[in-house]
Length: 192
Image 1 (cartoon, rainbow, N blue to C red):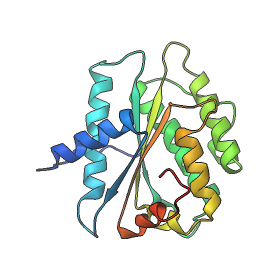
Image 2 (image 1 turned 60 degrees about the vertical axis):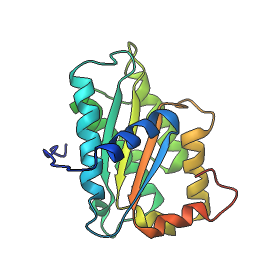
Image 3 (image 1 turned 45 degrees about the vertical axis):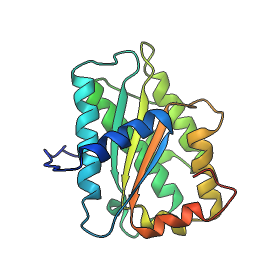
């Protein structure tokens, strides 16, 4: 599991609060900024704030588990499949670390094959918690490369966030990146 750094995030409390509200209200958020603008720091601060709510046991029956994913970690092996596998592994690590429980979905994150496999994996992960409804809030940094994925990838993200399936309402994503993320908004058929 990636260690959670203690972050100093001055003057960005309102941005962090808006990102947390976006998880509840919209299911998705976009954090735009140029290089070294502090996007990663803001995501870590949101992670820290949501983790503190879990520690304080503010919502024991509906915890929101922050899942930080650094896409640079994938290096040259960057594909939609690698994206889903990274998010799945980070989700398991976050649930184990944040909720101090052993989450053992029936399939391994590395065995996921595509979007449908990712949905099944998230459903399996949810089934590990009978006494609460866990919501995963993916805080995804450095999203510039996902804009190069095929159009179907964006459609799958829309379905994941707002479609009807076994994990509806139990997943939210905050994307951070520079102006490349604007391409998500160029297609009039997408809800992003």
